[in-house]
Image (cartoon, rainbow, N blue to C red; front, side, top):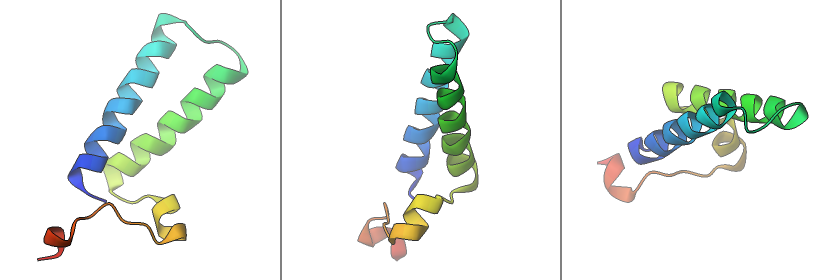
Length: 66
């Protein structure tokens, strides 16, 4: 996972948590947002994305491997 991908995931987590803090969503939608935020936070902190691993996708450029 590239650093740019990790940064974007972390920014998305911050946006989702701020939406929940404001109280825009409640109930099932709020629970789904919390679960998605937790998955994105895990992926951005550990640099491991289970979705990428299961589909053999990569966000690295060819220069990242040098």
